[in-house]
Amino acid sequence: MALPTPFTTTSPLVFNIDYFDWAQGAGYKKYYLLGTEDTGGKKYSLTADSTITSPSTNYKTAATINLDFDLTFNAPVDIAAATATIEYMIGFGGAMSNSTVWTIYHYNGTTETSLGTATASVSASANEWQSVAVQIPLTAKHFAAGDILRINANVTQSHSTTGLHYDPAGVISQTLKQGGAGTSSTSINIPFEIQ
Image 1 (cartoon, one colour):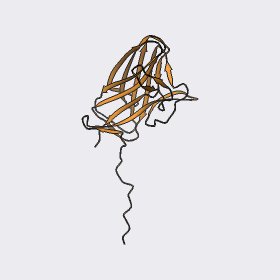
Image 2 (cartoon, one colour; image 1 turned 120 degrees about the vertical axis):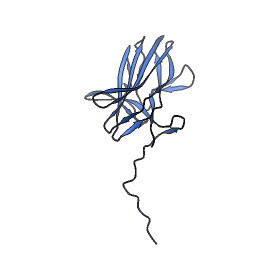
Image 3 (spheres, one colour; image 1 turned 180 degrees about the vertical axis):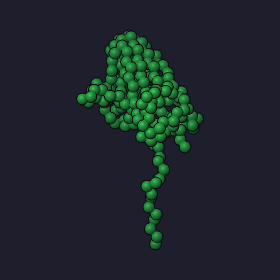
Image 4 (cartoon, helix red, strand yellow; image 1 turned 90 degrees about the vertical axis):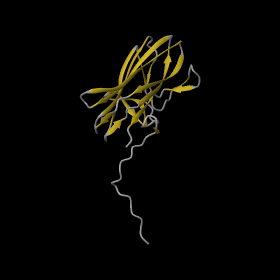
């Protein structure tokens, strides 16, 4: 009796996607905004791990916020010419308006190239929470190994007691103005070309 042929170590790399959208022709991977802190200060990145809890300071409050969340690719990938979707929760300490400009960049360590941008504007009364979803049509782009996917959040608000959350595990939960519950997890679905 012949023994089965063992698997080789030269199998092709398989990219793990969360879902495939036939209409967009793209495989989507979900990433979460993450804030960490060490002796070198605060750092902002993207992670696919939804179980990570950011430190207790898992949000930033200010009248203006401008943060970059980065993910470095260790192998070449191609971002598809499809629509990225960002979902997040925002709370209002007072009656206010809030405008967030989301921009997705290719960054090679020297130059940022915008792949797409969109603005979300919301307003609410004091002590209200809302869930917000933003769609960003992207330009196709090749990322070489070592290139960075950068998500920039540029927030302008009329009240300083609300902020941007970056906690993958979503440890803060609130009842939303539109019904249901929302968490402090901010996620983005990125479209990749699938060969």
